[in-house]
Length: 293
Figure 1: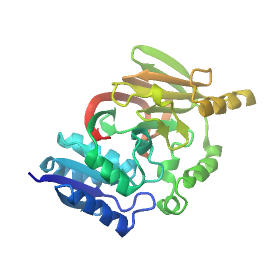
Figure 2: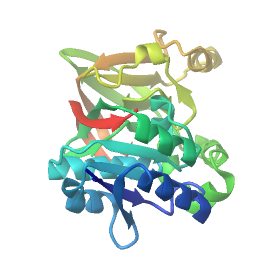
Figure 3: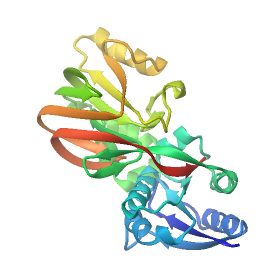
């Protein structure tokens, strides 16, 4: 029996895909006994497309960056469609692809979707908004959504590095109270993130042994304000060695996290503008979807 596949393509992600690459993807999918319907995110967003059409298909595959995947998953959850997701990464940083060990070569990732197995994946809830791999505030977090798309296309991942350097002057600590699973930590932090990923913007790497993408818990990264040069060196050393148990860099594990600030703080959610908030509550939606690995 022929199965129905929904293929959502974001032509604006990363450096884009050539017509040849897209042709290869569609050809491989059709050859695997799927009836493939292609949707481009022009007039409607990936989230709207998934919400409106996913329930009529047996599999949803998206081609784009991490933001595209996040939007598709959000649409699926809103529609309550129990449909597994396949991901063909074509973005700039591709943090989710790194965490899932997905190939960045379209022909290889397509074949792996066809041979792979749906596995559960935890999803985050930021107030009433879903996210796939990260919600963050502080240093460099605005880079992903403020860097012009044309710059990302021409320079790729290096665009994030350049924009991050330019953002250094805007870094300032935020006094933060963090409540997590019945515990509390507070301090002046220059960066905070709630993640379900082993990679953050391609710059911060977490030890895969610390991260289980379906254990019902987030990894919460907190970086304190460096007061002296030795603190700054300690932060760099912790990030390089992937050790996060020092005084300046902390990693916590929690299913629910609450942040309280003394002023409104800007957040980014899966690389998009998440707005400014004085209080933020983030909850882990355990095994909310299935993604093909």
